Image 1 (cartoon, rainbow, N blue to C red):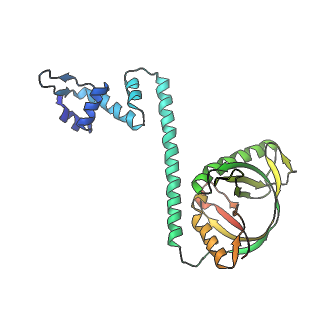
Image 2: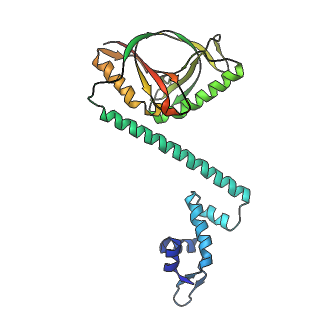
Length: 273
């Protein structure tokens, strides 16, 4: 048998944690000396300890761990619990990866402060275009709020277009407006150019109005990392006698499967200051 200290070392846990598991009934000692109260464990109990730690690291509560180890849940229930936790972890990993991209983008924006834009920025007229679109609301204009909204919108839009037998005739056009209910919320429009008649049923087909003047810049890479490009455009607008007249449109020129290879034109409506 092992003393509680030896068992803790072999199990790579703390003595305090073993005492807690004893108190909650998760892992009782094999023997407790009635005179001294010292706890003793066997090597065979390492298997239960390993299961406790593994289930805890999946994010299960101690009560859930106890029910599983005491076989109070079915195998299918256990599978469902683990599948759910797997999905939660994958979502958290995706969110963390997105935050990392945005931190890197913010860092590049800071590093480029005071530098002259090296991107080609062109002021041009943008003609009206007919688009099919779906609309939803995001909590803010920050990338971490926009990306989870616009991606599923486009997936659903293209699904509905296929079902309706409509083929896009041009690139996607994402555009934004302040939401009617205010509070900093944003109406997100996921659109794509079509030649279909005007309609408003399973999706809306409308004529997007022209922009008399738009300052445009091409962004290469994921839209999660668009911040430095957008701020380069903003500095150019401010430094060249223009003022912004709304949110930039995003024209999806190239959208391969690898998001880092996307090519997107930002079209910021402007007027002379």
